[in-house]
Length: 102
Image (cartoon, rainbow, N blue to C red; front, side, top):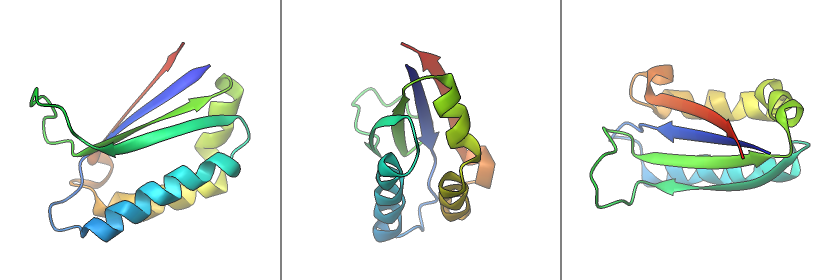
């Protein structure tokens, strides 16, 4: 399996309803992307205070690397990226993506 971990730094001015819509859209990819097994995400909630400005995160689990690779260019994923990037501090600089096997 491949775990796709993404951290997002939303601009403060973005309304909560828009953030909620982004996460609902991401969750909805599960039925649209072949090999996408699970999705979990939400706002930063740790008392450690190590978020470094990142406000939200999510994890997607894919069956295998080819499934993850198909997701990257899938039209539904492209739509979500286009939806979320304008809401992020610094656009693409407001995203960290890190994949690992497990």
